[in-house]
Amino acid sequence: MEASPLGGVDKALLALDTLAGFGAAGAPLAALAQAVGVSKPTLHRTLAALRHRGYAEQTPDGAYRLGPAALALGSTYLAEENLPALLHPALTALSEKTDELVHLGVLAGREVVYLDKVEPQRAVRVWSAVGRRRAAATTALGRALLSVHDLDDAALARFAGGDARPARLREALAEARRSGVAGETEENEPGIACIAVPLLRAGRAVAAVSITAPAERLRGEARAERVAALRDVLPPLLPAGLTIPPAR
Image 1 (cartoon, one colour):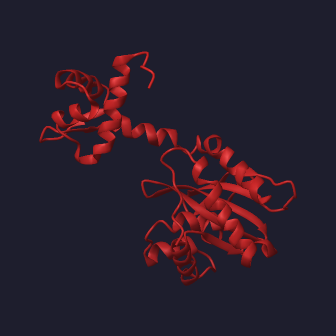
Image 2 (cartoon, rainbow, N blue to C red):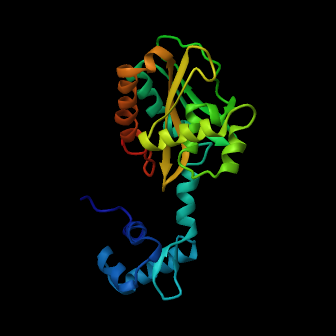
Image 3 (cartoon, rainbow, N blue to C red):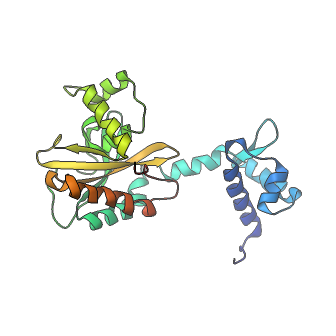
């Protein structure tokens, strides 16, 4: 491997990678020095610099672990305002693979907000647009996001709202958890259906991606092909740290 142009910076980055591997419990200086491949005095100085900036911290028993500044980097990188730029290549690839309309959305209260939209070559006329909102309970995007949460009856009723029945939402979320894919058919627009998967970071849904198509193209074998596309196209194109639920 080519030598780093800045050895001190490289040691600090190796220390951060190693700290991440030890998780919340952290590790003592000796174990970290062995894992990084440097002497304890050298690593102690590196860790002191990382602690000064909040990228490392010490537990009461003296172990070192990642600090809040390091954890905040991931959250900032995957913040809502960055997601469209980070995920647009994945959305484009999915749309090209399926020749269908693809959306990116996030949860905002009881609604889904559309953050990005990639149109296929064959036009699909739907209501959606970047910045618009829909009730989470009746959209595949919203159901994908909600399926990650263990909602009690009161929360289900809040999300269901209006004339929608909480039992119907509960059933839809259970199916999404079982299969890893949420769906809806003609609940928002006649003749239109959607399927969606949540994008997970450390088990928490940060966004969801959907395929929207005429209902006849999201039934039977055609639906299975589009579900397969979600599973095959998205994972290798997602930013580090994001995953989709495994196939069940």
